[in-house]
Image 1 (cartoon, rainbow, N blue to C red):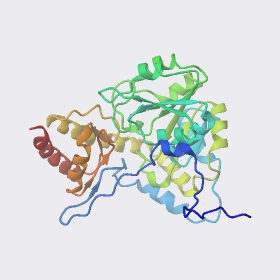
Image 2 (spheres, rainbow, N blue to C red):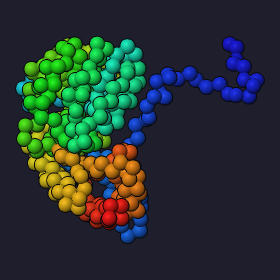
Image 3 (tube, rainbow, N blue to C red):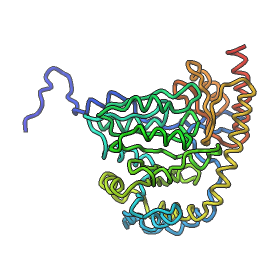
Image 4 (cartoon, helix red, strand yellow):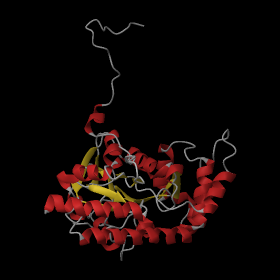
Length: 369
């Protein structure tokens, strides 16, 4: 084999796809700074701060004993229970390593360099990553001033090349949830061959009236796929379990695109046990929602323009002051998520939220008088 000529002194490098230069990598939420005398709080990753359900911990322990064996690739037991709970066919469900893998797979089965993908912005940071990796043209439609999807603008952005549209409800990071009537009106403007993914990672925390119902939407629209996760309300982010509900043809396509044996036996068992305790999960989610509402109201009382908050987080649209606010939090041993246009604050323990409220009040006085 002939070696490359490096006589000029410039080392050769592998040739990577040019599309990698068009979007940043996904950056996880930062860990809090350790400061003497202050309990650190990580409010940057939308993690569930409540203790796991004891029955789920027991299920994990019972299934953490055969690491040499592959898990059930089809996740048959979990899909069977999901199907019974949702009132759908098992053939309309797929289980994956978190909702993130579903987003990758959905892009792979719909998109390439000849297609376009439409999604709101700001929204989940993986949308530009997954669509960009596929080479698709990315059409980022700015959310409205109130943080809500601009569905009229998204509909107007559809072209003959559109292959994928992503909706996020509640929208991460801005917070508002889509309403059922507005989504159904939007879908009348979407061609039947365009796949519409409804990302409902935070649906259990939504308390507003008339919030879109993904299960019913899929039943009525063959081009809609519902994406959900056990990471948030079920507090299983570290186990990586997500699922999609869609018509059988879409599910068959997804099975070709996901990683084989991706969801471990322990993860499947934990999700299945948590599903059996859905009533408890729902109560806990609404407890977090109550804390969220109190926190959002307290920020609004200080004068902050906080959009409708329906997830387990609150959004502060700080613009160019986002980094300064993040720095102020860092000095108080609190990690928040600076996304450039604003700061997302995950709902956590009261002490951490109270600390953010105190510094937010000082910050507002210093910067707004």
